[in-house]
Image 1 (spheres, helix red, strand yellow):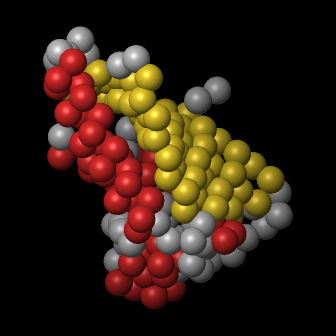
Image 2 (cartoon, rainbow, N blue to C red):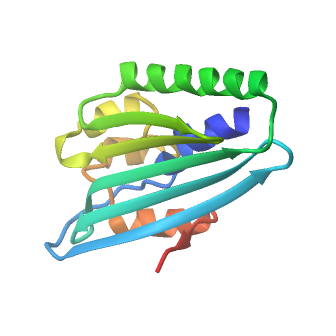
Length: 162
């Protein structure tokens, strides 16, 4: 369970790195990471980045957990557990962050949108959305770098979706 929480709350944010300047060319990329926890679930995390030049202005992250054939009571417990996590994320989300979830069949889906044009970078750092930054980086960050985020996602095991 802790592994899933780490993925849901930080994998996206751990790969976000700062940049220094921006251009205006529009670009997008989608990265996918799939992991399995034997006998429990298969997780797919998809992150789509939208940028102008090197500056990311939107990140859409969709995490799906496809639960194995578990008994009804266990599934209900897991859904309630993840619903509580989502409720806490929604309550703590700073401006520019939207979190939602759904459950259908044996698939739980968590969607997190980061609208960085409307977000306060400092609030994102304070909320734990931008992890893995040094103190120096935290003091100098002005925007989320498309290039560095793509590199970070690849280094974290994500693959670029065609």
